[in-house]
Length: 110
Image 1 (tube, rainbow, N blue to C red):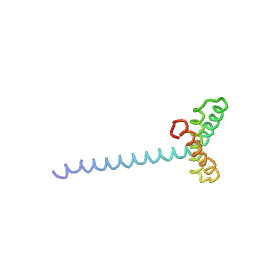
Image 2 (image 1 turned 120 degrees about the vertical axis):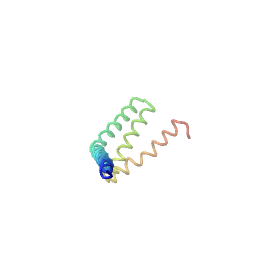
Image 3 (image 1 turned 45 degrees about the vertical axis):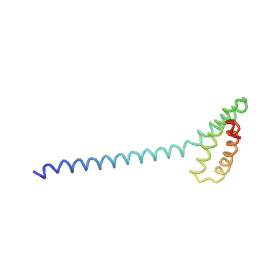
Image 4 (image 1 turned 60 degrees about the horizontal axis):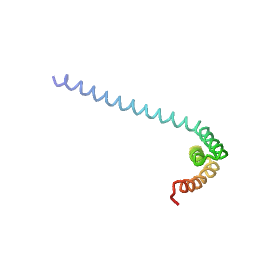
């Protein structure tokens, strides 16, 4: 009788372990797919936001130009970090403090 009662418990434990492993595999696949997508496409989104920021600057739409352009700068900085491209990382990474000055001025923190 003990064997019959303990068998379903073991089966439930196996099922829980299987569910945990399969959910971990799912999240690992999702993470890898997201990482691959970002590595491939983030620079295009960042370029879009940089160009949009330049357009908004030419149309004199302050502060929207800062928001857009800084999103592009953050995207390119992250792209430079992921791809280990020091030139991109230095170029766009050094723009972040400049945008922080604009944010401080905009929100009255200076």
